[in-house]
Each structure stands twice: as C-alpha cells, then as structure tokens.
Length: 275
Image 1: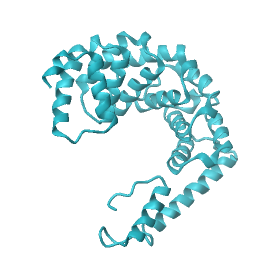
Image 2: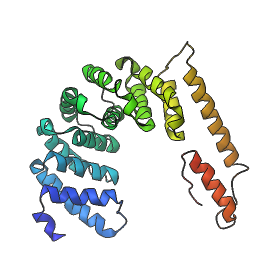
Image 3: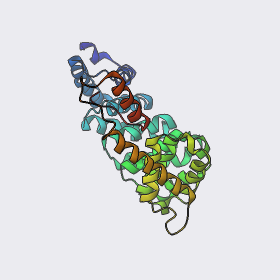
C-alpha cells in the first residue's frame, strides 16, 4: 500500500477498475486500498488522462463507493479535458455520476457540447447510457442536445438491444417526450419488429415508460395491447409462484421443488433470494 504514493494515474485507474470488475470488495484490505487510492485521486486527479478519469469513476460507482470529494476532483479534471474524451470514456464518467447521484453542471454542459459534436460516433449502447445518465441526473437544460440525440438515436434503434431501447424509453419519459420528437415512435416500431427478443425486465420497463410518457393516449396502438397482455401474464405467473409455487422454507423443500421455483422466478428475470 505504501507504493500508492508512487503510482501514476494509469496505475490507480487499472487497480480500481480491476477490483470493481471482479467485484472484489469483501476483503478488509480493499477498504484500506480504496482509502489510500482516494488520497491519490483527490490530490492528483488533475494529472490523470481522460481514460484514467473514466475508469476510476466507473470503478467507484460500480462498487457503490460513496466518495463525493473524489467525484468532485474527477469531474473537475474531466471538465478541463472534456474535448479530449472519446465517446466510450465520456459515457463511462456520465454513467458513474448518474449511478452515484453526483451532478456537476459545468461538467454536464461540457459533456453536452462534446456529445452534440460527436453523437455520430456513439454506438447504440453509448446513446442509451448517455441519455439514461441525463435522466437520472435530471439534466434537460440543453434542448438542442435532446434534438441532436434524437436525430442520431432514431436512426440506430435497429442496433440497440432490448435493454438499450427500454432505457431510452425510460429516459425520454423522464425528460419529456416533447423534447424527443419521433423517438418513442422509433422505439415502438423497432420493438414491434423483434418483440420476441425482449426479456421480462426490458418489457416491464418499456411498458411502464410508455405509460408514464402517455404514449398513444387517445388512440389505438397495437403494441401497447401486446405489452399490457404480456405484463398481465407476468403478474399472474408471479402470483402463482409466490402462492402455490412457493416451496417450503430453506432446507425443508426438496431439490426438485426448489429447482422448479428458481427456474420460474428466473424466467421472469428475477433473483431467487433465500433458496
């Protein structure tokens, strides 16, 4: 740990990223490591390159490590270098801030300026995570940003996974559908084309988001009927699982009962706690 004082930004970033990637945070030594790393981050963030800033912020957020002073240092350093960020690193630090609930307007303004210029280089995942972060942080101060996002995202819906599509729909519902012309229509059209690809969590999020956005209110939209039917089916399955299908408490149920329960719950995209 004493070597931390001699570590470069790349060294610190690689270690934080590695610990977060393997979710290795139960060892008491990790707390000591992170405490020492925070000192280096806060004191020397201005020396770090964009990649290092992105990896460190992503790692801290992934570990749910609450360190507002570190995020302040990271974001302030990122703001100074914002024009040097590639889409991947820009989205990583946006995601990290949103996950930790850390909002810094000068950084968001700089990130918006860069994004508007480089949206064409964003993948569907970048677009999804970027707008999701804006929604989590309640950032809708730049109407032009949202219009630019729409122009790019609407043409890339076919590249997005069901999770990307549902994330975008949720963000649009939170930031205001009126700010994203044609975006929900593009999501609905793409969803209808490959509805069978959607897992239960993505379908639930999409259904809730379209409802919150008041999409197709007052007119008939076939996809909404399909989503509603699927959600009701999921609800009935959950009710069945947690009543007739619930096995005896832990250690009392047979392996076959527990296995069937786990399979049914996981089939809905849920986690089987306690069994």
